[in-house]
Length: 443
Image: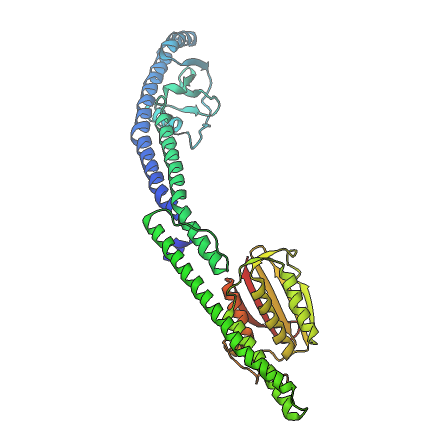
């Protein structure tokens, strides 16, 4: 029951607040209008219809008490003007069985019901043929009495004035409510936009405004944003220091190894130094994520081409293309350095475990999606969550012959995707048979 109720509610705070505010007003207007129509309008109409019925009964008696048809017509002509209606007699005619009524003609239907109840004679009532008159045909001994009764004599005068004022007042209140709610919701939208932009690596101007609770939430967000920026700055500075402190001795070791005489031990030591530098770069990339980089507009296809070109220089076979349902390439706001590292890790990881690699871009109106597929052994579905964890090594599933990685390639890409408000998923490749990795971020 609760789910069915929530399904019809507006999703936005503005919409829900508007419903809460306007629903009682509309309900009140409907109740007042219903009571007015039922107790006043319908009652007055019944009284006026009763008066018209008495006048028609008087006209019928005038016809039937006349000695001849001509005498009856003279009597009708004499009383028509005082009664305020048009009267005529069709001698020898019979009342047609059909009635012309509209279901929404409240006053007309009330008149017809009252006339049938008060005049116990065969009659026909036409409420459609004339705009301003009601035609009533009554069977008499000398023929059919035909009466044209002005509409204004059967309904209360200007009954719509109250309804018009009610609708106009409700509309005016609704306009004021919409303007007021827009001003109250605007600071909340600004706060949501600032928080969403900060989650994607962009800092947009924001100043707390609105009600006290909204201002407190805005101030708390600004304080949180400053602390996060300060923590990111401290981590970046620490990473630069660690990088300098660790790379300096590695550089000295490399120079020392280069000065040694050629030997198998020297080659092994040189390979170990290269591996240590590669591991250090992976650690720093994982710890850095997208810290210190601002989001700017960049070409997502160019980023993919650059990552593929780096892999090709390393001997990998990488094909880059757009998906069939992709929009034309256009600049997208993102952190190009971080996305470039993520794509480079995904393509390098695919090239390490497969012979063929296909990288595709799918650009939508609300998202950007990169996919990298290989023809390697893939990763079993039950191990994919583990593969996304830092330092995870699945060498028993992915070729160990090609050399194991540090276990941070997918973790780095996942961290960068989340920093952009997106996600990283692992799937089975339907075209190449290996692993398919999808990096998707919102625009």
